[in-house]
Image (tube, rainbow, N blue to C red):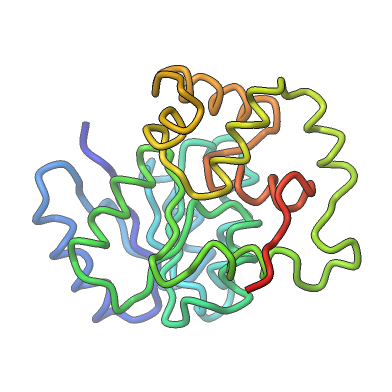
Length: 226
């Protein structure tokens, strides 16, 4: 199946470069280009995009607002968003994860990294740039929250999870793949995938990135001091 990609960036030159790169791959195609967030939301619906490469800083409706609009629209539940940013460690990154993005990537990344990011996001996996360490993301998730990142409402939602699903969620929040989790918990990768899918359904998470956010904000996993 061909991955339908939407480019959202206010710089035409960057969009052109991304288009050439994406269209050169046999399993993906660019289905539209947007210069602002409002246009990105409209085209995501019109062109039935699978993945949106979204710049954060755009005029008018920025990438953060557009990400939130897409992730809260039931008709766009299948759309995955990869945030493209010049600054890999700023508050916008975490806000984008909370808003529903599947992850983010620095604009200075290698072409292979960008293509891999599209495939990872399309497959429903969480994408965190290598430059964004888990500890750093964890600290940002807890920033500005008087409860130190603990959300009682989300903590109550965890009650719906089984013991094993909680164990798997902790591993997902640690950035581990299904194969790594399977090895750690001594179960099959298929079993892990089943637990992940069930946890996503019970917690209303769009993808693994949202599971990571919920794990921290619920207090199930605590930020570690560096």
